[in-house]
Length: 59
Image (cartoon, rainbow, N blue to C red; front, side, top):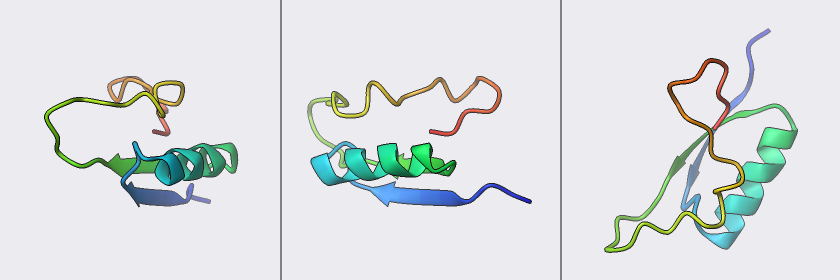
């Protein structure tokens, strides 16, 4: 059985970060899109981020 996948737009926002955390806890593979801006603000998802080059990464 394949793992479910989710795409979250606005993943660095409050709602997107909470949704990512919830879906990861439920076993989803999560992909996210953030708005292009002058600052790279990922504070809300830093605790969830994993290096995409590692094996079995879910976010």
